Image (tube, rainbow, N blue to C red; front, side):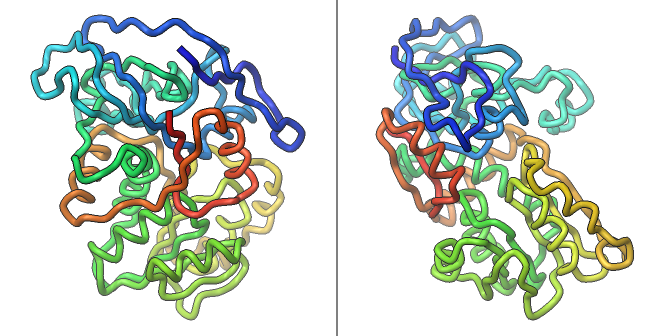
Length: 341
């Protein structure tokens, strides 16, 4: 089968083809696993973090991709809820131990042996992949393959971020950065909390215009101040400046939720600008989002199917995987990017 691999760490400022297209054997499922014929796979900034070495795979090469939609071609599982011929999705969470205190309390995202799809094991930038049956999710007929892919990471991690905000109606919420995850969070807020306003901070004028299209109350640059202090802000950017800027925009007792697996070090000097009274005093809080749970994925898919709403997607043919990666790196973003096999 054809597959894209990461074979080493690259600097995307100088390397335009970090992914290598190769032929790999079709994977063979083991007991408890499903063999999936991949139809689409979402493209995520986490792939950039893998390529540039901020969250590198434990071994090379590895097939990236963790927003996977496809058809079950072979099942060696024990459950009857997923059968051969079913359409399923695979998310960032590939497996966890199932027995630790975190797994037993529906917090597999914190499990010490958490394994990530497309980093710790081969993912969905390929014709086929295998996955434990407990970490495959039926996809409602409402969504096309391309629409379903971003729900599995951008959507699920945004859903978890919103839950960590402690949201309720009439709270004022900010989103800093407006890519795949943030645009889904904005849609979700408009349906779940119709009396809340959303304030979007984004460097790109196109991202700001897109946020207004989707119903944002206010948009501004990362360094701009909203008309009011906010109850909570979700940061979805890969850098540090928006974190520091966001802390200035919180109410007393407000919370900043950082939705990023890693932060780049290019602007780390902004951290030296943090002043206790200006940024942290008055019981402001900072929460990080670590991975997702299988419960997050199931609940989010069920919720958006009931509402319903769909992600905005931009599709790329499989052979243009490198271009999709570079477009995200260069912030050419409107909604979510998806590879179509």
